[in-house]
Image 1 (spheres, rainbow, N blue to C red):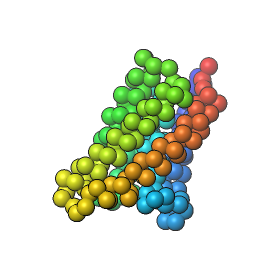
Image 2 (cartoon, one colour):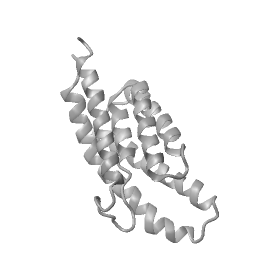
Image 3 (tube, one colour):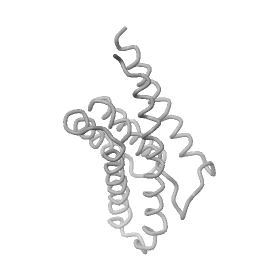
Length: 169
């Protein structure tokens, strides 16, 4: 009976991830800003990792990464591996060494989101030898990173509310 709210919270996170995947993958639902659509599952995984221990955070990171990989069709495994590792480390850092605050979460989200999207571009666009990488990066990936980060600010407050409302005492 002690873990009742934990199970409900984990179920709520799962529903949130499914809803965000549907929002992200439905054509013409979210507006495209300057050539980029947000990757809503990256901030979802990160904000869950801020509040949960490392093992559940890692599994949510893997789930979000797998949905991102399957949703985009090519390059299976990049987001799954990266988000699994990052969420595990974030869960450990915020459990043992840092306090979860809006400023800390915002700084980590900005750095990790920009890093993940830039590494994706580097691995799968530049190393693939595609044409005009600078123009493509500026017209699609910068706006995608900023849009994803801004959606992450909203998801931080949603997941903070879920965590506090369903906290086991």
